[in-house]
Every structure is written in structure tokens, then in C-alpha cells.
Image 1 (spheres, rainbow, N blue to C red):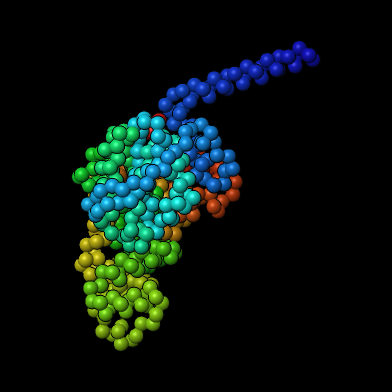
Image 2: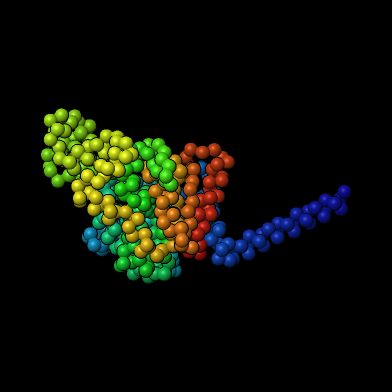
Length: 383
């Protein structure tokens, strides 16, 4: 019995030594280091996990407020990085419409987690996004962010990419297609974005999503409604009609019947799009919008520039997202299907872009592993 116990103890020690050697071997290789950092990143950003090991094995990130020039003036931003002088991979992180403030715990946690994973992180702040307006001028803001990172001595200029959320991810696609930086953007991770602004508008107006010939009920979030309401009303040139529409749809005031009777074709199209048309009616009404609105939606659609995006493309979307239908990302995936440098992942544990808020333990673990596999492709760039 004693001999057996001694052998078991020796075997246990041998197994521990072998396991430790395998761990050290894995961490000593670039793929192993990337896997370890990715696991730490997932544990850091998914709030359900009580263990947050990333800070135990990395330096302390510095958060540095900066300004940088762009085609739309000086832009305020925050840079997160570990100040050790080493040139690192970098990412422009664009938060999208109505982002949390720059001191929001989730924003700071994500910036620091990415910095601990090996990235320099630049988070630009857009006045348009804060006011829930989508403006093509933010493409210049993002181009300026990429150009700023290119000039920093602590950034590896060959490993600069972007990560965006919702509208922010679609704006990043537009910026990555811009001839000023398209050859310099190495990778993009787009999360819950849209592919075509007109299709997005139709789905919002009709509360129906569509893909591959099928349609499904889709109930858009109030934030999506707010963004489209602003976009449509701002496009009306007649100040009386614009004020009447704003009073009714923004301030919840009454719409006088006399105003409805004399509305222009364009204002009537906006009114009807905001009052629940059918899918077919919404399609027709989009064609009656002011030319300026239709041109803006064309310019804001990644669909029209996707062939100019040379960056490696990673696409994420939650199937139940109420801010942007998952079908938009599916169409983006289909558009780049012929490329061999893309990854597409659908999830079921995000509340829009916040992970792990409405699922059980088994689903949490499974979805977290899917998130690990997706993010590994990004973290591998920094390792």
C-alpha cells in the first residue's frame, strides 16, 4: 500500500511538471502568448467572470488625453498604452452613436484590457456621435486617428487597425476604404454594424428585417429610432415642415391636420416612414426622401466602398440585437465571402455590445469560447 502511494505521489509530481512545462512552452511561443492574452482579455471584458487575471501578468496601462488634427478640426481622444517604449500594434476604437462618457467604467476597462493585451488604443470622441447624429464628416475624424498613430514612436506602423461598435464600426469601414489610409489599415473588427444605410432604414421603419428572400419581425431599439428620426428630419429644407416634424416626433407634440394636408412630398415621406409603414411602403418612401438624405445614406453605406477595404476583416454580431439587425452583418459577410482573410461570428449572449447579461452558465461558457476564438485573430497581431 505504501509503495503504491509513493508511486502515485511520484506520478502526480511528474504530471505537474509536464503540465507546467507545456504551459511554459505554450506561453513561450507567439501563438501560446496570444492564446493566453486572449483568454485574459475575455475574462476581463465579460463581467460575469469573477477572476480577472490580466492585471497580474501585465504592466500598468497609462491613459493619456490627447488632441490630433483631422479634416474636421482638432479632435479630442484618449490613448491607452503601457509606457515601456516598445513599438506596439495599435487600434482605433470607435464607440458609435451616444457612447458612454470617457470616464465610463466599461470604456476604461476595455481600453485598459486591450492595452494589457499588447495594443496601443486610441479612442476618439465625436460630437456627432454624442448628439446621436450620423455624419460622414466622422470619416475624416477616423482617417486623422489612423494618421496620428502612424506618426507615434510607440506604435508599429505596420500593425495598425480599428475596432468599432454599431454605427461606429460602419464608419470605420468607410475610413478604411479612404485612399489616404487604406493601405495602412491592417485589420478591422466590426461589431453590430450596418452594411447599407437605406436597407437599415427600411428595416427600422417597417420593424422587419430581411435576408436571403425571407423577412422576420424586428423591433428596433429607441436609440435606433432616435438616430433615424434625426437623420430624416434634418434633411427637410423647409423650416416650417422641419419644425413641425421635430415637434411631433422629437418633442411628442401634436401634428395639426392642416399641416399634414399641405406637406411636401419629401416631408410626407419622412412622416410616413416614422409612423410604421409596411415593408413595401417603406421601400417606396425611401425613394421620395430629399436628394440630400438619399445622397447621405449612399455615402454612409459600407456597401458602396467594401471593395476598397484591404484590411483583414473580422465581423461580429449578436443574433437578437435590437439596435442593428444581424442581417446587415450577414450581407457584409456575403459581400466579402471570396476573400480568405475574414472571420464572421454570431453570438447569443450580448445585450447589443455588452456581453453576458442575459444567459445561463452553460451558454455563457460556450459563447465566451466563441468570443475567445474570434478575438484570438486580433490579439495574435499584437503578440
